[in-house]
Image 1 (tube, helix red, strand yellow):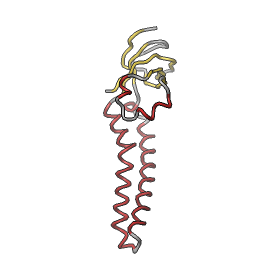
Image 2: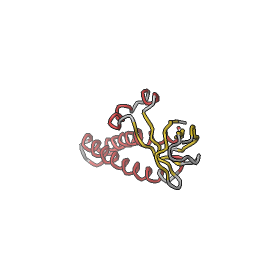
Image 3: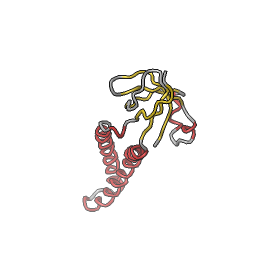
Image 4: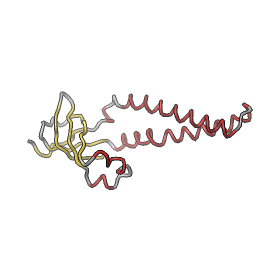
Length: 143
């Protein structure tokens, strides 16, 4: 379970927006290079399960299993799909009387684009589930 500390900026009925700062955990992350443009502070929307109020210092968490599923869906699935498309194109080319390289590249590109469509549909469905949202799990200090 990935956790982070922050301060509640605002709340509504079920969610809280938490201002977090870059932590030491970020230094070991493989994607830290892509986060530099965001600066040291960011705002995270989380399900307010602990009943935090504005100004409270809280701990938010995100399930590791959900994070691994999302990582696979975003990074690995499109590449595997592209390889499958290339293999199908390479295999089908002699039967369709096409150049193997051309059909392989065309099928790889088509499957890659289809994978992004599936990622978008799956992402929209996953966004509706609570397990893919960070949660306020503990209040460290009341305001």
